Length: 207
Image (cartoon, rainbow, N blue to C red; front, side):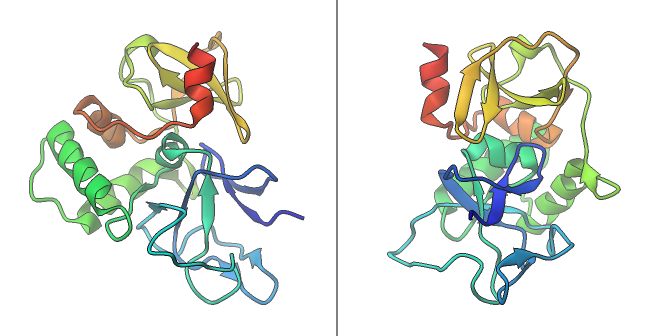
């Protein structure tokens, strides 16, 4: 039976047999004895996105009192849930993201802690996923942005929308009003040049 460690664009953590292309964490939120989640869904405002392989290290998932391994379909999914690149295993990506985030949000010399504080406020509303008004029309949103419509999550890429699933993306038009899933400050980082890694199914769906 799969463990409860797959993250949706809305930030929920559920069980799925599909594997992700990125891992990450929100601190320690599991019981290693049972390899199940605790009631809390984060223990730190630093929500990270990490690579699945780093330095030849191997971890037995959710087996010890260490950070809880979470998994994402792709980086766009992780960003939508409110995560950011890890400065340890993804230093170059993290520095590129911080530079784009600073440019897009009109700030400079930002610490990771200060960025996490902004993201934490944007990702949550009284403990649940915060949805935001679209800052522009769907077809103008930068690639990698994700929105929610009719209880489904959609990726914006090439001015088109792709419906998200744990297995990948399928081409689908959004026909009802949509809300922004990706934190607004992260969207502004995308506008300033950061390009999140998308699952291969996105390119296939766009043809």
